[in-house]
Image (tube, rainbow, N blue to C red; front, side, top):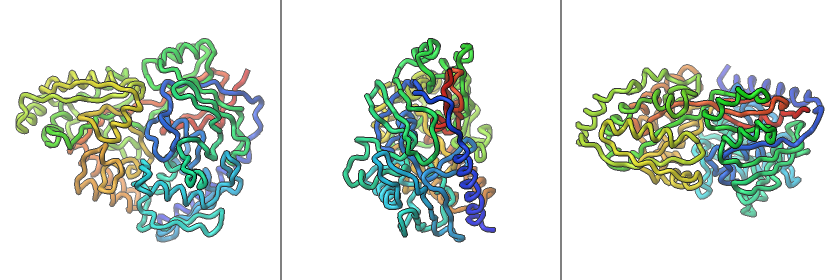
Length: 508
């Protein structure tokens, strides 16, 4: 049996099981509006362009991709009921849920899918996951419920890529009207009724959602920039459910008798990004010196209270390399000083590191620890903090010497990193580094279908990336949500999605 045949058999079973599960959902005992809070608001409404976690957490409640990952990172149905690879992997065919509708009442059809992916592939759009779909050579729509993607090469991770909310299906009519991003018309479980930036969002339940019955009437989201204020609101019962980012606050939740903390290891990673296009970080020795000078465990223990673990580039458990096997993951100041001297910078240099306020809330603390550590090898680091929307704009332009970042993980190494580390990647301005080895290994991993061989390829990729040190990977942390104990049914996932709110009920 080929990889593609095994995928067809496995995924057909997953689709059937999910459909049965949807049909088995019983009516909720009581409907209610969930009062929710978070500290960082969305920065925009275009699902194809947003990179901030705060935006993605909102948009994944409003929009839908073709497929979706569950808590075990297994691909399951979303807008598509079923899918099938050709035996040679040259085509991928989807059958859409015939009951799926957009919030404007229009049926979701193959024309919308085609228009959405053509928009993602159009360089002028600036879609953040464009590089994930470059194997798509053409898209056919034989009928309203069928979409056929013709692929220029075997593409093992493309299904996982299609589960991303950055690959959401939007109405073709809204693309034509040029209104994507100015209003949110999706097909998801909730409708965005109103948005007052940095204040609140009001969502109502989409009664016509084809994905099943939602127990809630809606969600009222308050933006409270101080997470201690969110905890106070939970304590007094003014908030039912909250998304937390700060481990300093999250670790206080279990002390409250009426509250429950959901703590899930995440795929996202904390990282110090070096701009390898700016001198002296153009020099490998300087980048490696920075890697050797940083004590990743100290950054984790000091800035994140030890809430997480030191990581290499790959955070997916099935692919991750033991950090002890990676270049200079044991701090070595003497080696760092020698590398600096050999590169002609024995006296160090000055640089600026940028950090966003609020996402993550530990960014400034991470920057301060790194500032102290790099001072040991003569690097005088200035910390520049800024609002998230300003940070994202500069980050996307690669306008920084160094940046403290929290970047999203993915369930597959290729979809996680190809946009940064391949010659066709659409976020090269952020990475500011590419070499033939990284590009070749990524392309090999994309085409390879044997799991053991893919793991070997990406192990080489990870070790090479750590040795070249364009970024300094620090740690993974946890996805935190807190809730009143009368809130039931939410399931956390490694991706941090809030899609589990579709299963939530609020009791007395």
